[in-house]
Length: 93
Image (cartoon, rainbow, N blue to C red; front, side, top):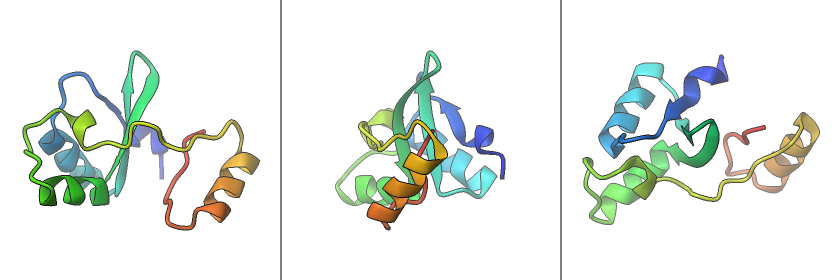
């Protein structure tokens, strides 16, 4: 899998846009970037929780995102984080 596809420019994107992109790519997580900086991570579970809590699909994508995701600076650190947090699906490096 090419994780570059999971990077989604955040500017003016809605929750609906993210949900569509996840469906197109058949992925469960997208990394939201703005000016080449990670600003949030959105999983399909984040979107479900957002909707169940009354969120609107036309709201800005960052409203459904995890704004302070775990990040790693190398593969070893990513593996350690994933081992410590088994519910996580991916850690951006």
